[in-house]
Length: 86
Image (cartoon, rainbow, N blue to C red):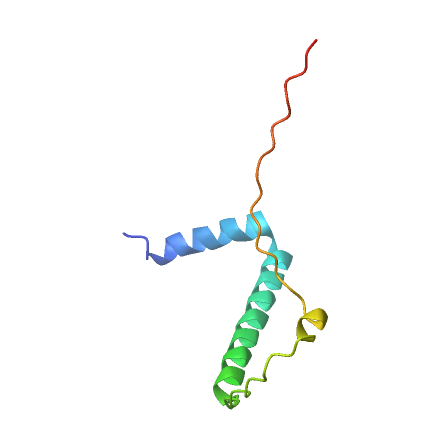
């Protein structure tokens, strides 16, 4: 008698149905199925998607940075306030 005995699996199934209920298990099964279908679809789209050639880089224009978002690299520092005199 091991964990793979069919009687053990029946008892586990009954406990799971009692804890979660059949409605939640049905929803879980359908959600899992939709997730797998979406994953397969995404994988197939990646495989069939032709590779796009690299865009030639354009020379930098002086006013080009005004219209494009910029990232500011900064580091936060803790500022200590002077002790109060009472």
